[in-house]
Amino acid sequence: MSKRPKVAHKLIHAGAVAIAALGLTGGMLTVSATSMANQQAESNLRLPAKEGPASSALKPPSKSSSTSPLSHLKDLAGTKLSIAILGDSYSSGVGGGLYSGGWCFRSPNSAGNLYAARLRARGVNVTVKDSSCANSQTEHVTESQRSNMMGSSSSVINRPQIEAISSSTDLVIMTMGGNDIGFGNLLKTCLMTNRQADACRDTINAAKQSIDNVATSYRRVFQAIEKQGLRSDAKIVVMAYPMLVRDDSYSVRDSSGNEVRVSDEIRALSREGNKRMSDMVNEHNAKHPGQAIFVSDIPDRFENHQPHADGSRNFTDDLWINPVNYLSVRSFLSWYHPNVTGYRQYEKALHEKLKSTGFEAALARKRQVTSS
Image (tube, rainbow, N blue to C red; front, side):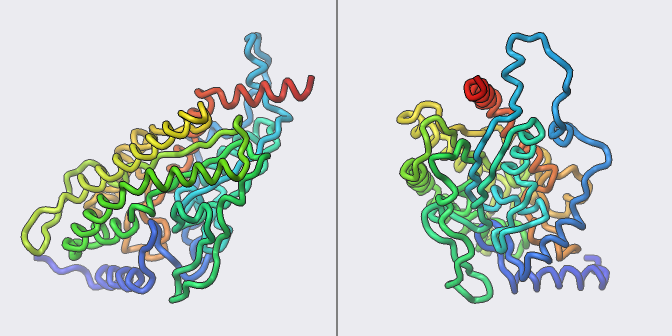
């Protein structure tokens, strides 16, 4: 076996020490200061000089006239819209940079905030109440979230997320449930080092058992939103999670010599978690027809843009999710979260779903009624 270069060995060791000291909890890595996270994100996430489809979609529409009888449905100028963003690190935009909100790490590049920017570019008067927070679980919709960092469990880092919703809210956007299943521990034990194969196996089994709780948790979230006074004509958008690793059949051996099929197991858990969320959206719509919307195509959009479970293969691919990179210790906050390109794809999926389900047309009609 060839020896690693001393410099690379020291960097890898430094990354391991940082992880051991800071830990991975609730689906994201904790850090010592928000400024460090911003520095990391801004240095690693450079917008391309050439606009892609997602970035060009944020441009204001052409001012050329249209003869279509439905052209008035595209005119949103002057419309008012109130958006509430709830959920975990995938809602807050961890990996997107330019953070605010202290330990919640809220980014203007999150899907919800990018969608608000799209509508503002079309002349909509958008207000956003962002109560999402990294590390949050479904219980933090109705309960304050407290810090588990630096040995403290008493400081409140985020008030109940439900407070962002009122009778004036028009649109609720969220990703939620991944931390309830324990994806943070799953990633730490299964993907960050091969030396934890037994822990990986145990964490996978624990996640399989806890996934049954997703339905109950979502039911409580919908009930809390309803009690908060959300109008019947407002929309609740639940966004699916991507598959966090590719379909590459990566596996490790536990101490008994049994195979732990890491990538297959993680992908299966992701599929089942997304299915449970979709089921709960359908259950809610049975009582409140059409109010909840599930953006289901995120896994398909992200396919072949995720990291490999075998991290040595990640450095030449077009990734939309940040991989583990021990040679850049500053980037650990973003590991297994979308990068800016990934969040643009999230926003594109959100926009297309809301457009296809008539949300923007209803918004335009509301403007017509208000102005008449």
